Length: 444
Ligand code: PA5
Image 1: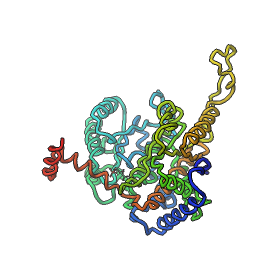
Image 2: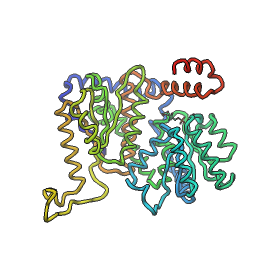
Image 3: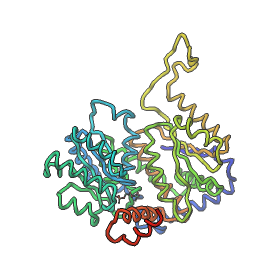
Image 4: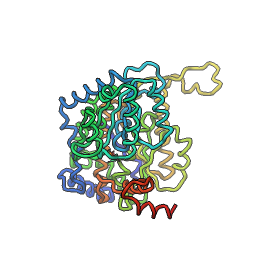
């Protein structure tokens, strides 16, 4: 199982404060489990790991196989919760240099609809001119501008390349069961579709087809992913702080928040976890950051960022705490060779593995940052496998809901995301936004 170590945060609060915050976490746990807290119409993710049937997972695998069998590339088109979970898992479990490998057993997963960059889309279309591809378009609302725009362009490219009928067989839409433009489009064009349950919000949707289909198409074991989440769910349902790592994490981060540590840095030591951190940032940022409250989620990848952000973390303003995500076992072994001349002075490391050295970097950095006034928690996962990533996903989702309730916000909505959209529509001249456009133009 994943382990948590809060040892290096304990100098920053008293036992009494820990006890009081634990009581607050237990109240939040009760609200969550009884379904009586804010946003309780979005609790579908809580039971997903035990509700996914093997028939349903088989259907996902069959669709993934069908897409993979005709594609060198699968373009996953979505934004926010509609792509970050899939990308987090695919990159965590994948080869760091997969983009450069000539022979691939599975299609390469590439993303679209997560930005409005013309250059990005142009580069993508140029690549798709020469590759066989399919498109998985994902939007719960079915109306989000970025993926809708990208999909319009991709659909038109796909139809030009394969003809309308064959293109339709290469497109899968994942959206709401009853509303939204994407559903209408999928029905009228005859795309295969999967449904995002009504009671599961975007950033909590990795264990729905939103995450499962791209992850399966990339060749990863979704059964193991779900099993990991199931086992973690069991642990998270336990209403005893001492036995529940999600509660412990929520308690400590909220204790630190109360003491003025209002920025949490998720630090990993594996470049393949960069998108896991992106997923985590969205999960916590959108869930907690409202009503002028919430810990600001940031991330770094060590040791790379020890040479960029390390200075600030060590000696900058003291409002930071870190959660370091450590992977206990590397997937492969690379050892330091002996060099008889030892001109670089590194022979003291001969026969050590790179992972052993990374481990010392992890321990050394922890102590340096604690000495610099940064509380540091450790989360340790045994290895980067689908099973443990499944555990980690559920752990973070559960702890996020608890943390949100502990600061008395609704962790499942995102009202603030609408503001930029309104302004963008007005500035684009969308019918109905004329007054706002005039108002905005005066300010620009
Ligand atoms: O967590 C969320 O709900 C959001 O981040 C959404 O996932 C994101 O805005 C995309 O929305 P949609 O899936 O409706 O296109």
